[in-house]
Image (cartoon, rainbow, N blue to C red; front, side, top):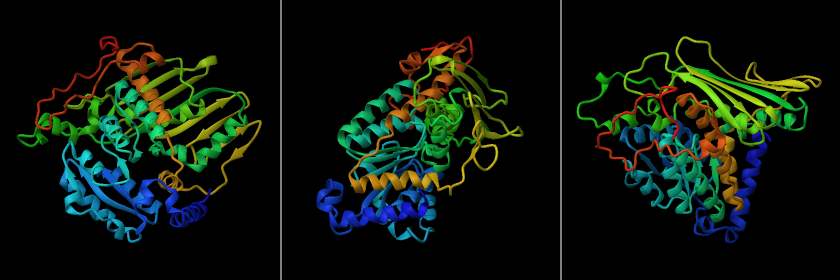
Length: 428
């Protein structure tokens, strides 16, 4: 579907909402004057600001009314950037009283009267934040990944089921699922154009995302907890490691190609090549998954400066191959030749267009189960690399290793767990 038809579809929903407001749930019935959908943002960094902008663009009556972060500067910069967008600036209505700071700020956003909550904090917080939103009957846009440990994944699965029961929408930030270019490509594969899939090879080679600063850069008196959260990408409990935080997109595409059927097991290698003071994440992984009927999937990621970069997918079938990412358009070669020829739309915007349309139509969306299993697929590879063991899907799902501290004390001491050592680190 083109962006033009998406906009037309959205306008149709808005007109229908005005005419038939009485038939919608309380979110619409209670807003007969403005028909506004109030949005709260939890996590005001670059991704959060982008998601808020897309939410406002998705619905002509969406209003941003509350924000939360640990840093006032982040909120101020986010507001400044959002108010620069002319088409939606007048719907940025975050009063000072609705700008919340601290680890409990998400609770204040939820309680502020919003209808939709955007969750874009470091993923270690995601299960707790998501559960609170759904308990309060809020619609949610939830960035990927959805957890950093298996207990968090299980929590999100339970929360997803609760969201379905409550008829509230839950949309995940696995953006490739909303890209029409990739949707059309996977439709070709589902229709058997490359035959039976026998192997999938995905690469996610990039530069470091947020390098760990030296200990000397830490301000005097800053607590362990604050230091780690401000440098969240370098700590496993907060980011899940590079495989789970970034290359999870590739894991999600693998899961998609396998019809979201779980693998049997995996083995993996990984480690830290470039020393980093203070953090405990790896800078490279390579995972070998085995699926039912002997199908293999391989996922390689690296975050080291000065190296070859690539983000691609190679899907091998009995009748051909599909390549995504090497060149501007996906292509299939073999018995059938095919190349995507449509107009690509913005997948980030599309996520929010569909979320807000689902609210207007009273037809909830729920990405919960697959966003949990795609996260677990990447996490399973991390477990195998960290321990040096073969890990089964059931082991990964039922792992008792809890990485996220409970409770989290903003001013407290929080020792950094040693970086995992294959063959020494035990599976829990």
